[in-house]
View: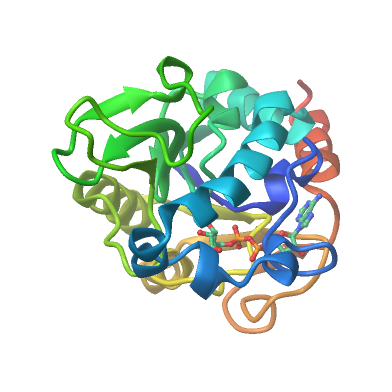
Length: 229
Ligand code: APR
């Protein structure tokens, strides 16, 4: 059974900047000021201004050949699940069905006071920060630094990494825990680790069995071509 772990590199070809590397989002915004839950609580309006800019890129983004290739691999029975660190829902829009949102989903908002959830379309972002009907501050339903991984997502991701024969690690710098622990968990139960990334990472010379130094869309196109599909 093959499983994929995906990161921001997968959505770069859809126009959404990655976090690290050239033109990375964290070069322009300090993650401790804009992506930590305590910073959000301290000044939600400031964080929402950055989110509104990033949100525009996500709204205009469309799935790219890498997203579609993974959906096709699932449809053909080669891929069992995708564990994604991305919050752009592009895997689902490409047709993937088993998608574990390890860092949540930016298409939903959640109230910091009462926990009520809203779909992003249902909320007008004219005044920032947006507020719940209880007047609590709304935040994207994504995992900020300093927040736990949703328990259901964590359990499913761990179960898949403990059972898979192959883990495709695509477009991630593998620097942020606990997502960065998943390839090692798969490796420890003898899964083959296939890394797809434009650059080498700390996994490349330690646990990756195969390293494809190419773009995600090129690699997925090649894999599907090789499978004769
Ligand atoms: N194809 C393949 N890989 C690519 C491509 C591409 N077209 N473009 C960039 N990459 C690679 C980069 O070389 C880099 O290794 O994608 C990786 C992106 O790394 P990050 O920007 O660190 O993104 P990610 O690993 O997903 O970050 C993990 O950090 O800030 C938090 O919560 C945030 O989910 C995010 C987490």
